[in-house]
Length: 263
Image 1: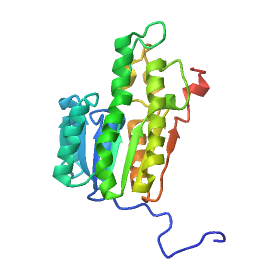
Image 2 (image 1 turned 90 degrees about the vertical axis):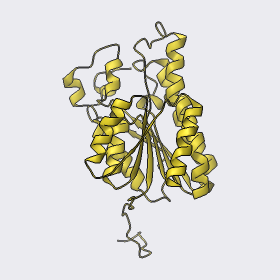
Image 3 (image 1 turned 30 degrees about the vertical axis):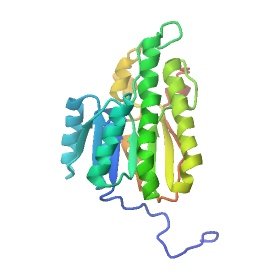
Image 4 (image 1 turned 120 degrees about the vertical axis):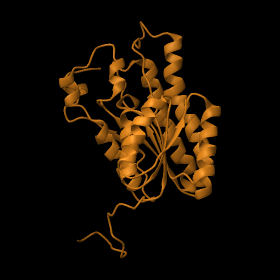
């Protein structure tokens, strides 16, 4: 084909990630769970983190079903010391960390300016933004030593577009997460480290249960599903290490932000 030069490599082929190591936060439900299962199906070693052990055990069983024995590390990402200790144990166990999928996140029901209180604001920012920062800070030294590593920061549609629906705390935290990801690329590209801010629109995951207005089953059915994000995370992981997807915005075809005028 004219305009495409071949160097003898298999152009366009996704890389084999068998045996590489992934750490997934928020792995007990939703996007984190789906990402962990997809990466396990590709043959990766998986470390699962989250606050609820019973939910992590559910993900563990799903991963065992595809022939991988995951490691569970209970974790509150809002605790910087806990984060550092978990990453230290990962390094001691595997001597490396190839991919970090940072999916831990919450929102509160009382989220509008007229309702949100300081405790609600702090809880969202502590987990969604500060927690992601603590995780990035902890994994970067390992990735620098390797001269390679991928961080997938699971942000949100609300991280690139301001929305009344998600509230100011979540919107601010997710915007911060996007900016933080790009700052990693600016500083760490020389060390072979890549960060992607993954920004999905509405996804039918348990976080919807915390919406002020109940989401119907019909509405959930046309949203993105967890497995859609799992496959997206797998795609990012399989791209050649020379490729950095700085930001990936993904939405349902029936995007209610457009079709229903939700702002």
